[in-house]
Length: 131
Image (cartoon, rainbow, N blue to C red; front, top):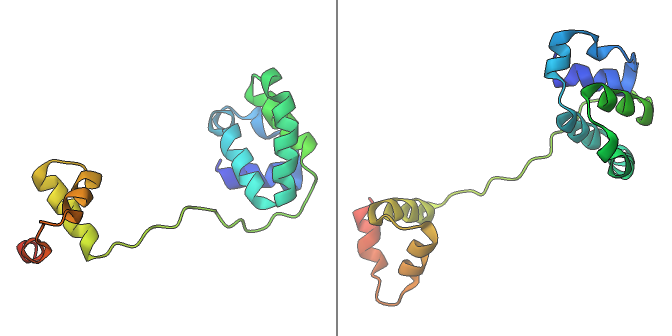
């Protein structure tokens, strides 16, 4: 059973019988479920944060997690959840030069940038080397 069927059970159907199957019990990850629930609705994120901060020390099993989530999350229609992820930084030509130079010199990228910013460094020659 995947995370989306678990979400659907906690948010929409609220059957309370999800963890009766051994395979489903093994696949159940409370952290991931809470993360996806918080992306479903901003009000759910606040509710989870407030409730779980108080109850966290007493919850020891997956069954307790599941029953708590089923009981505190209000019934809602299931909708598409847009996963929030970090934007990737676009690489330019200088980034490729920095990576190559740092691997050749066997120094970190930060040290390579410092080296390239030095006044006596001739960037034209370095760029020609990597063409």
